[in-house]
Length: 208
Image 1 (cartoon, rainbow, N blue to C red):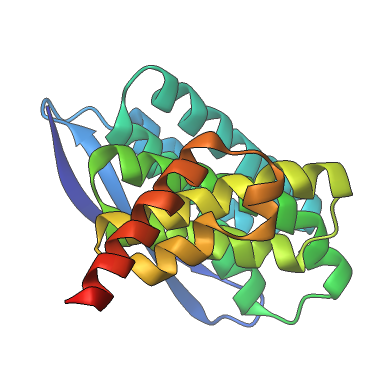
Image 2 (tube, rainbow, N blue to C red):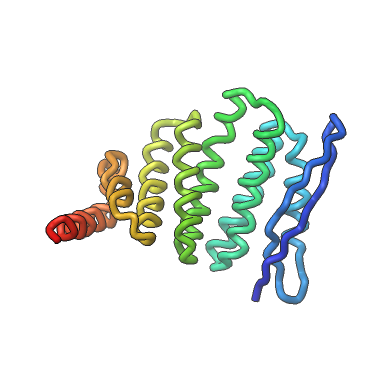
């Protein structure tokens, strides 16, 4: 049994400006919050970190999120993935970052956001799934990653965004995602099946 608690963590940077980080902590009903404490500490450290230090923070949270997902702990997975995303957003917004720095983080963030989209789909949070999948696709477009990784990740993220669109009744957008050349080229059977079904639905609507 979980309940949601919002907590604010404060840290000063070298210019003595005060920053607040709000984290959604999924805490066990008995009050245990060791995981939330670890995440809060990681995010605070990420404020003044280099891209390499941030990468370690993000990868730790991603690893815990993956483990939570595999064990069926969806709230725990969301907490960990959200912590990765929050840390990266705050890190990138606090000061100008070079394209090279952002490229080094991009592929990892794309994976985190893609996993977050999958968790949201599993829990029926389709709007959140769409947002996460869309951001994953954007992160990929900004990332410098091997073509092999791009070809592997992009179809997954497009499919997940398409599933979210389909669930929300945004049929044309879903069809666009399922019919994207990257998805078609990957031979995604479920995407092809859903694309055919949507085409039939849209054609039927036009006849009315």
